[in-house]
Length: 404
Ligand SMILES: Cc1cc2nc3c(=O)[nH]c(=O)nc-3n(C[C@H](O)[C@H](O)[C@H](O)COP(=O)(O)OP(=O)(O)OC[C@H]3O[C@@H](n4cnc5c(N)ncnc54)[C@H](O)[C@@H]3O)c2cc1C
Image (tube, rainbow, N blue to C red):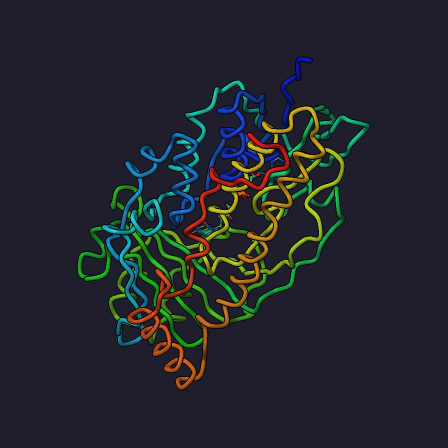
């Protein structure tokens, strides 16, 4: 019997949607991407990617392209907010490949999206396609769009991010919980931070009620920073609300001088409120399934949202390739193999929020000593206990029902 190759429609042309499209394309499975915006585009911000993401890129054939345009900081350093004292330092180059099988990489989001898009045939993209709902009719998945059109496929993948319309059509509206934390982000030219000994390092500053992370992107031409503070002064979740420099300068006024000089060097600032969503009981019904932020939106404290979205795409494509004639098995394999890991990352990110923002000086000291000791004497390869994240290789996943 000849098995027909399944047709997959992906809603959302972000990092997760394009990674899934590429993973399917490389396996000879037809995948079309339906994106609501008029062009494939990304917010001007950086992404910090760990070795698990780079191993995923390798299996997609884009590891070299990503490392060529990204930036590899020699070290990852955690500093104390005011003095700049080093709490922990971890090598991000050298023997990292030996330890985890791939490097760390910081990259501009738009650069990564371009790499994925260039690896796919242009005919696979449908722009201005604003999905408003999905359903399964028998063995056929259907997506409806705002212009009244419909498409059919064997599988519809909802890769439409945090405010997923696909998730809403499957499970109804899920009210997120405000975390009591707001964030700012900006990009500074590298020249603006030449005063900083740590400008080329991936650095996290941990302070009372907040933390700031910065790292170079785009071959070291720009420095991306993201700052978090416990506050309820803003409650809008959009990643694209522009705001004034003065807000950040006031909020972080007592933090380390060199950090302030970095912050003041951006010409644009954006702020958003952080909302938390509990892990979903299920990722799909019938022939419609979720992927990336729509399936497992997570707080940013482990830096794993994009990494997990890319891993999802690889495991989903592999599951479909192994069970093309039984897509119910493929989708159930995908969810079974991906959910425990992404749930652990969702819950781990929640926990890390508390650890990063400790207000009491005594609690901070205890935490810093514990991390410093773990860094020096612990058996974990990472002082922040992230080995379980970094060791994983989605392309080596072997728990599928149908053997290769
Ligand atoms: C400032 C910031 C920093 C971050 N840093 C990191 C990091 O360092 N490391 C990391 O791993 N993760 C990081 N994350 C998280 C990461 O960005 C997300 O987890 C990742 O983008 C999820 O990818 P996605 O494809 O699931 O969703 P998205 O990237 O949100 O893409 C969703 C796509 O779907 C489209 N879409 C939405 N609705 C519809 C619709 N109705 N119809 C059709 N298309 C639709 C959108 O336009 C978009 O293109 C960060 C997030 C932010 C905001």
